[in-house]
Image 1 (cartoon, rainbow, N blue to C red):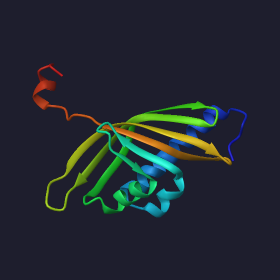
Image 2 (image 1 turned 90 degrees about the vertical axis):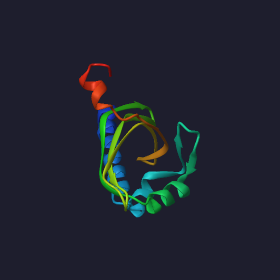
Image 3 (image 1 turned 120 degrees about the vertical axis):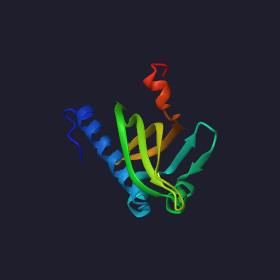
Amino acid sequence: MTNRGDATGDFTSEILQIERDIMSAIKSKDTVALEPMLAHEFVYRTHFGAEADKDAFLESITSFPVEIISLRGEELRVNVYGDTAVLTGVQVAEARPPEGETEESTVAFTDVFVRREGRWLMVLAYGVELPSEEPDAISSGLA
């Protein structure tokens, strides 16, 4: 149970830990660990208009055909609004398809959590794939 004395600070730490636990479960494709962190009405959306409910999202984790080598969050920020928390950040993943070389992807994301019976549950995840940086443009100052 979270101390209500400085609830926002405590809740921020709690949300950041839950996010780390979610990323760890996704990396290891551990849907047994992931499932209780998602609300029953959980939805995953992308900027392409794709949408998956909780069951479809969990199925996509187990059927994802690549080995996830690393998965981490960067630039994580949490805002708490009563029993709702919004986490924004950048997810950096390194993965290897069965027949290919290791690839890195970067996704800007927003995760929304609600607090129910003293527990934070993710109700919405939204991700936007970011373009990869072009080395020539960066070195020439054009990026």
